Image (cartoon, rainbow, N blue to C red):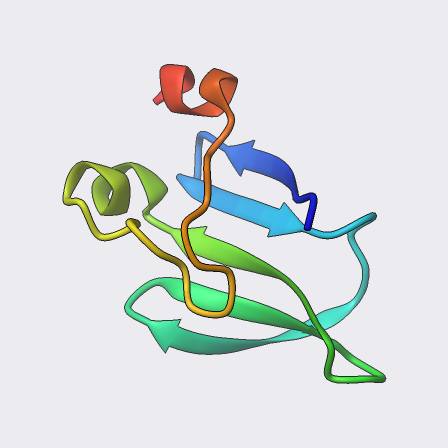
Length: 80
C-alpha cells in the first residue's frame, strides 16, 4: 500500500493517507495516533500522528496499528 505524507511542522502533526486526502472520521488507537476512516464506507484511509517529533524520538512509532511498520519519508524526518 502506497502512502502519501504531509507534515505540519508548526503543529508537529504528521498526516498519512492513501491516494488523495478526503473527508474522514478518526479513531484514536494509541496515545496521539489516530486512524482515519472514510466517512461513508468506514474503510481505513490513513492515519494522523500528533506530537510526531516526540513520538518518534521516544521510539513509539515502531509500528502503526492497521499499517504495521511504516517508513517515514527522509525529507520529513530530516526536517524535525
